[in-house]
Image (tube, rainbow, N blue to C red):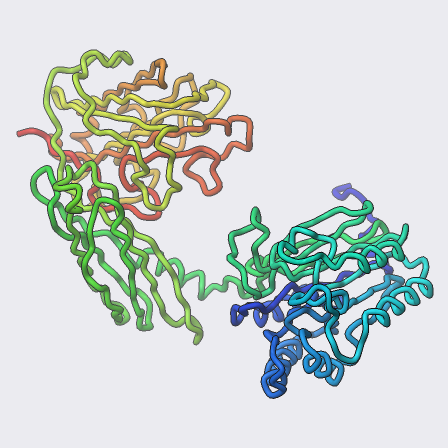
Length: 602
């Protein structure tokens, strides 16, 4: 039968609950509030906090009342019970402790649900963060809390599991660099927990970490809106909630980052269509400079509004290492059905002097496009490359032998040591680089390249896009197709992938496109070389006569240590291969119209 079994995973004793992390310590407004609606989507039995719910740290009663009123307004949006825990921001003096008691009652307590004991403790009674030797003053004492813990554990000696909630991770000495760790009473708590099954959850540090003590899991949560550098998973810095599922084998913990929890409206037909329109709203316009070196000029974009609502446009310019941008861009509005031309004036960096066009590192512009979708504000960001271009010379000469021997190539003038595509991850200069040259002979185009690569991946068992090699695209069509066509599999281009093994042909490319290119590769002591011939007859057919201008794209692909990992073609999102592009990738997210254009000698 087409199923693995019929014992559904829905035992009546199982349940799940959510734990939220620190909200304060320089609150980032809106984050915790957004978590409320997302937690409702999970439909937990209840929600537990690990403290630091308000900024606090004050004896001003009016301020405390305002902050607690605001927070209680947030949790009123929950569709399930919320259990408070006290953090140092919630309770750092007697006034705050008394305010807590007046609003919420005890600062430490317990409850059971489906035979699971929840023990919620007040870490500030063990020792305040501001003075680890002193319990927080107010209605309770640490002696009373310790007696409560002992009485609760004696009264409920054998639950399915015990969940301990406490704000400070009192066991983690790395959190206490400049003070004595208040561990004595905590060790007594661990002794009282004894051999029962338990898991401990804490917060306070704003860094996620899992520790194992006494063969038990101790989980310190990151943030749910609290102060954080948000450097990502490797640093334990992210906004999340913990979804805890109680099973017969104990709790299973799923950390759900807030941007990973979305409701059914995450993408609607209206927002999908808006994105499609906005993705193509900013287009690079062909604008060729003169000569071989760039001093000053501009790059142009057309910003088109194909919707029936106004579109507000703003952009920021990062000119990169070789260019200078001196203007202050101003927002503007594009009316429905209209197109606005934007020209961005650039100059060569004075420190570098006049640069050869082919050697300029592209800058970037980040565009913010704002409109209205279904009555709601909608914003989309798009990155474009900033690169002045001019036609490059296509020298004429004798036809070299396409044999992988570059002795008949006196020079390879185009050196590629840095990533030319602004939407692609930067490539380490020492890891992969290449240089290439082109030549015309009797209408045919010849190409030669030398690649420096410290580790070659080549196998006939792998596809052409799953191993080291070069990708060459040559387009002789007339304008505007040659400058603006970004369709990856267009039939009008001669193209192929050059590998070091007899890999199967790349069947994505039309047969006539591949047949127009013949090539040869050879290994060298530092990498490999490649030579190719592109049929002049094919190019003439695309140009509708003797071709005069070509657009050439060159990419070197490097797999390095990725050859034994999941193999994803380098041009796909999540690829393990590294693609080093000569110039902004024509079929990528930020192409430059007319880049890599060569002009035939008269």
